[in-house]
Image 1 (cartoon, rainbow, N blue to C red):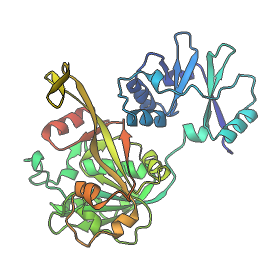
Image 2 (image 1 turned 180 degrees about the vertical axis):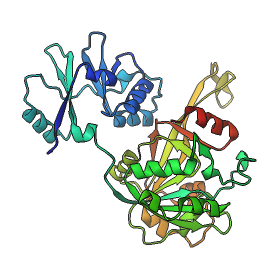
Image 3 (image 1 turned 90 degrees about the horizontal axis):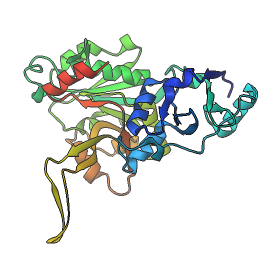
Length: 357
């Protein structure tokens, strides 16, 4: 680790602290606001009780905890800390040995005095370039957004002055991705004229022309069979603050064949629910809340899957996931706790114009 070490005072750490009675949602909001990518959990006396990273939250969501769960159920208590007597050189060596980027500084009572952060982690730009290609699905007609889409393709509808597809594209670029494919069908000329070959953004854009609608995964069969790295796929009608770099790393670290992003969704029944076993009554729950993951329209697929598809094949994504890819394929779910919104209706479009920054 040949990077400079930055020390943040206790006052400067205020933005990454949350109280012991905070929720997972509070931690998510803190991580999204802060550039330091760590949450420090403290009690009322500023005593450090635990640390939280993005991965801790995703593991909790996979286990079934919700955003309203208390943070003490998620936080790590096995963090490394140092006193303010430890030299910068020794702190960097501890970081190197343990492959970590943050070390809290505490006194003899574990009260926080500050935080050591490697500067390339806290202040780094997304300058790394990834070899992965991106497929943006932009061929849909957008019937539910009529009459707005009568003369304008849905991906070019503006959110606060910028086309939806451009917002998605620039997010991918910021994550270090440079090679793009855009599938087009309805009013395709407008999309091609707007984005061109990508030189405006210093990237490469190629177009996959669907002569007729090919389903939500059919465009995959139009891709060149020479793709050699996992492909990122994003629907062209979503707004999200998903961390694309972490998404790619999750796919790789889990040795997955396909990774599906799932956005956490809650539904509260307006009725009391009766639980039965056969015809026997078990219990009644008054207006319970159910949790599930909805398909976020974001995937990573290994190139071997693309090579196995027939040319110009009509295919929907559920059929690919449920039927075509059997038990021999490793399919994993990446929980999204960041902002996500499907721009499929006028109501959601209006919501996006209010919420999106």
